[in-house]
Structures are given as C-alpha cells and as structure tokens.
Image 1 (cartoon, rainbow, N blue to C red):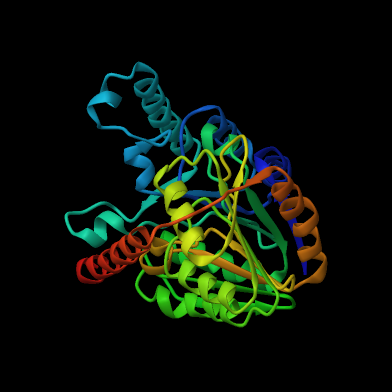
Image 2 (tube, helix red, strand yellow):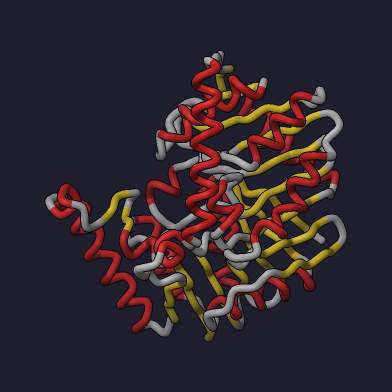
Length: 359
C-alpha cells in the first residue's frame, strides 16, 4: 500500500501527467467540473497524446450549466463576452477530445424534479491502467486549479480495482453503495440515496473522539456541526478551518454562528480560496476524499470517502497540511445571541424537513 498526499494543483498535475504519459491500456477520469480554459486544455492535450487505447472522461452535468462558478444562462452571463468565449472553447475542446477517440459522458442529467436538480455526482477520481488511482477534491478548471486543495495518489491492487469498477459502473449509469478495505485504508462510496447509512461510520468516529478533531473544509453544515458540538461539550478540542474568502459566502456566516453556539475553535484560512476537505480525528484517523462535510454530501450527492489510519500518511497530513494551514489562518471571535442560535436551529430543521420531503 502506497498513498501520496498531493497538495494543490501543480503537485497533483506533475504526478498525474507522468502517469498519463506512461499509461499503456486505460485512463479513466471523473470530475465535477470540466472547462475549456488553460487547465482543461492542458488535460485535453495530455489525453490526446496518450498512447492508451481506452481513454474516458466522466463529468457531472453541473459543468454543462455552471462555468467558472457562474450560471451560464443568467442575464449577466449572457452579456459576458469572456464567459461566452470560454463556453465556446469548452465545446470545441470536447469535440476535439471525441475526435481523438476520448469518450465523454455526463452524469446526473438535470430534470424537473427536486432530486434531478439537486443530486450531483461529486466524485473526483482518476484510474490509470490497473495500478494507480487518484481521489480527492481537485477539478479541472482554472479557478479550481488556483485553489488550495488535495488529492490522494494510491497504489494498491485491490483498492485500484475497486475504484476502476466504480468508474465503469458510473459510466454505465449505475450508482452504488460499496466499501473496500485494505491495510490502513477503507474506501466508501455513496449512491445519493443511502448516504446517511454510509456517513454513519464517519459520525461514529466523531462521536468516539477522545482528544481532538480537526476539520478543514469550505462547506460544513449539519449534521456534522451537531456532532462536533457534542464532542466539544465533552471536552474534545475541536477546530474548524474554513476559507476567509469562500466562493459561497453563505458558509462563512454559517460557520461563525455555529462556532459561537458550539464552542468550536473557528479559523479562517487567509488569502486564496481553500477547497480542501479533510477531517483528522485523535491524530489516528484521516477522513478525506471528495466529500464536503455538509448536508448535500450527507444526503444526495454521490461521493468517495477514504478512512486512513496509516501513521506515515497521517503524519504527512499534519506536517504538510494541518500545521501550515493553521499557521496561515486567523482565529475568529464568535458570539451569538440566544435569538441567533434559535434561528439557526430553526433553519436547520426546516431545511432538513424540506429536503426529506422533496427527495
């Protein structure tokens, strides 16, 4: 078993481009965003030049309507020449990829029902031949590439085969709940319908924490905050690190109010956007992968979750992610009124009830 932590896009791309060049049989790539900007074109050129006969891309349908974090069909976007040019370049890039023999499919087509609108395949997965796989949070677009993020590069025959099967099932239109255990790592998949049962394993780890929980994620919501609150109340040191400049601003205020009512040590990552998502429990188990610790991942997104207990990987995460990211953050003083706490609790219950009915 070999797991490498690849921090930020350039480190990730350096390893992935090497693996694509060396591929002999297949390159399977699943992403949430696939855009025809510099990062997307770089990926496309690498796949076109690969000698592997079987090259495929899966992207969620989200990327067909949202480009550079903007809804392509909003009135302002329709008047944005730069965004229209990028949309054209994206279409041309996909045409050229198909002409070069690269298969492209889109998951989770939009439809009129709430589930068809909200349920997204959020996985980021690359499988090269039968020997190497990548999972994590990095998408293929310029703005995602500029964000702070992380991927895991895995070399283990059983784990890679499990992830290869997952890609092929998704390619065929099937979502699954499954798990694969190897020495020091367990991979969980969610299907968008039975997620709560899968995530219970993560919540159980939080409930069993004895000393410390470190969470780094741009989007944290209930039910994870509820369990973190309970952990903090029983004396566990809980720190949540989230970006100061979040691409979805709602989450910054949400984090402030939750930290205030929960006694959580809230830190804002300074400078650029951080899209990295990880949870370290008691310095013994690292939770990583594509999942945000939010309600949509918990309920209706398809995700990949890795539970890692390999001491060397955990120490690498501490030294190269946790310690420097905390050093590049500022502590946030949070106070919440009784009314504010009650309002947040009411909002939480209303959202939970609405999504339960709609999905």
